[in-house]
Length: 169
Image (cartoon, rainbow, N blue to C red):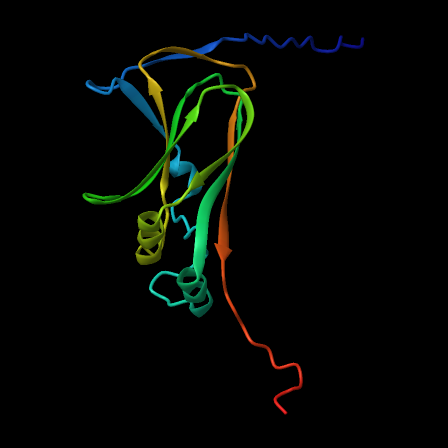
């Protein structure tokens, strides 16, 4: 005879994902560091090569009117807190904060001060860390949730170039 086909069954158990955040006093916030997700060798946010001068970027920095980080954030993780973008050590620090207070898509702009811009100029590569600070407590993450952040730099300059349209005649 013919043997019957094998019987196969899959069992799926959906478990809610929860965790307890317990950061130290006095801040009482826990930090989730996203820097490792950027790879082992993150590149300069301006595309500069370490140790190399970039004449076109020098022109931009010398004629800079304003600079800002634009962030498109899609927060469907179920967490609220503060997104911290930082770089440097000791007293030479770059730090910007953005409150994530609602789920869904949010566009934000972090204006950079003159000191921020000077920090970026002298720190090549400029590879800031990205952390989410959340208050101590118990959190339940949403199923299929996620946190997507897209960062672009907006630079406004005032560069005045003369172009010879007659081919140097």
